[in-house]
Length: 197
Image 1 (tube, rainbow, N blue to C red):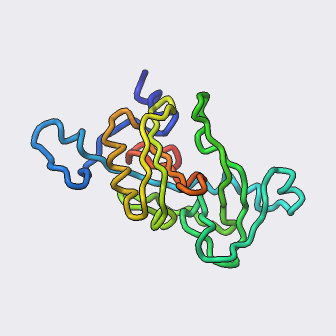
Image 2: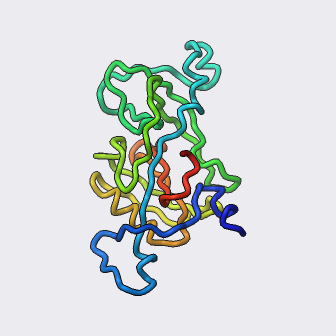
Image 3: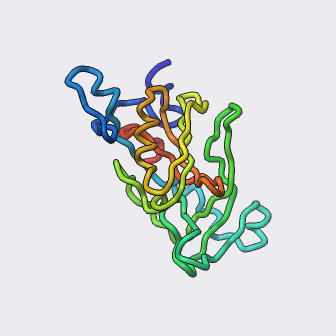
């Protein structure tokens, strides 16, 4: 398997970064790379959903989607901008295959996309607003898209969970899901080999 083959499922090549796990002591020998990681979080590409925005209610229903209006400033997390919609904003609620792999872990569920979402730059070594203050299920997959390990994190613990999972060299990417509702939140990569730029 070539390096490019290894990155096809999660968009990664399992590269080592330069950020240490919290509380770890970095030795001076080659084990430093095994204890360090730099991570990257990017929203889903807006263009993948633009065709929904021009549809009316009947057309959306025929496509298995709905247009909804946020009735609060929290509770309608956009998967493109990775921030919550503001009260009064229009969103599309649709089914999205977040883990499109030919194995038993293929996953699809409902997500929100803000109709006025602007594609932000990726977050490097920091969490986007949509992950802050939420309990998360973090699922670590290998290059074949098979589940290797997982963590359940309380609000404020997500970054520790990310570092912990990426401490396993077999894990190529992490999928974050809301712990309560189960919806896909974001994909987390080792920085440097993103599928969506």
